[in-house]
Length: 316
Image 1 (cartoon, rainbow, N blue to C red):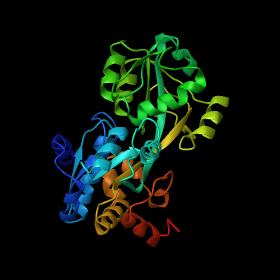
Image 2: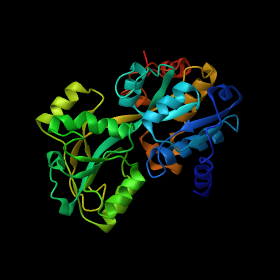
Image 3: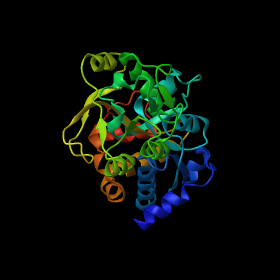
């Protein structure tokens, strides 16, 4: 654990790497905010890649604004690899909203794990459904991040927009602080479980976990096939005694297209053949499975990753 913490602290360096450094083994991985899952998981993956390559690769995890920023950073070559949501990757690759330009220099390495939409409100807010967000202060995530993209995707189906709620654009950690101080009424997190910030909140106050279900969800999935019907398992958080119907996306690993094929091949191999070691450093490692490596991936795979996945029968 001390080793992982040290790696996480080291992630505070500036964006000094570019994809050209991948050839000599020095790489930077863009992750997310320090209170989310991407940052510590990125540290665990980076640590494992270094350890299992006998030092051939040195990967530094970098805290960022998450998916939207990460696609731009990888596309421009400011970082070598990144963790992003599959829906944001698709939008960026194709130049769809909220991206003004195509980020088509990005290629997939593979799927990591599912991320659930957590819709949470304070008990005293009176919010029991997403439609009850009207007139309330709601944190929708950092502006332009995958979390905020998901909010804009689903809100319209419930008659919501940024005119009839008071949107607060904050990353996870700051959202949790504002929520505990009663400065906001609710929030939406697209994130893996269990989320430490939400765990912390539920130990100090009662909350409502708002279900996403019914006709609206069917319509959302029909329009946005990256979003799938799912459920946050019961007892994931204190006071959450039943499954909470919701939607999920996939966290995937991506790389710049100019990463050498042999490097991308080795990163893919090391990732999927050492998930047990990743899991020792972060529990999400237990959800990374080779058989699911292509799930939810709609952008092209990097040729090096594709070669490995074809060898393993994941891609035909």
